[in-house]
Length: 293
Image 1 (cartoon, rainbow, N blue to C red):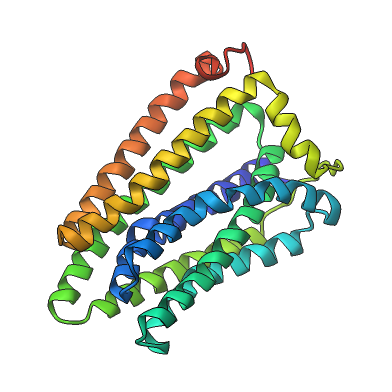
Image 2 (cartoon, one colour):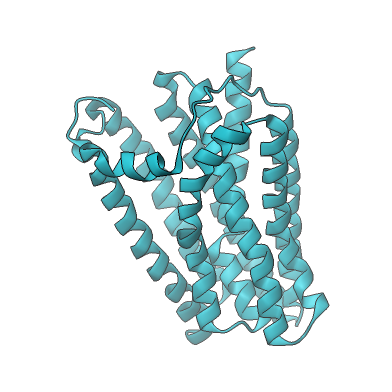
């Protein structure tokens, strides 16, 4: 195995995966749901799906410890995950009824959320197994910087295009272009992962009870659980209603909406690079109060 070559493959696939999640994430998908006529309540539930289905990761570790982390199984799950992310594009052509559209919207949304949570733990496990300890911080910072740069450029272009097409009465075409781009990125990502080396992962038997009790008993980890839990709750509640309020009630154009998304992505990219350098020297002591993690 050529470490540098595989490192680059893992980095590129992680950038593509994260960029796709951002592009087809809650921001533009909320806009698409509003276009379909889906109510605020159901849009709110959709945005919270990611937080709700996070609990599936508790079951993912015991499941894969039993069935194994074969490349074939993991890639099939990942392919279903990515296909679900683009299947939304067919909804406007199937029905004009809002109730039917809502049901059709949630079918791929639930599949996307569940398969995403199942696959996340395996790919992170492979990546952490392959990467050298000293490369992990650099990997994360580089991934976030490139991911957010892609999202910033894409958001600006899509915001401009959607506004133009909306003015010309062809808003749907803009969303179809969006999903087509998501599909192309997903296809490249899947092909790249097929060609990427799978490290030898330690297959320890993990029981469901242990995956729930052990983290809760770890005193240093409790702080991380609390911090992450509050973060997910706050961002989940805030994001959905901010998006709906801006688009539906303030009637902000897609361009300005994209600029807001760009500001968020830029701040995340720049602050991520800064934080990675600071944390490298501190070993996360500010969070865990431990010398090393």
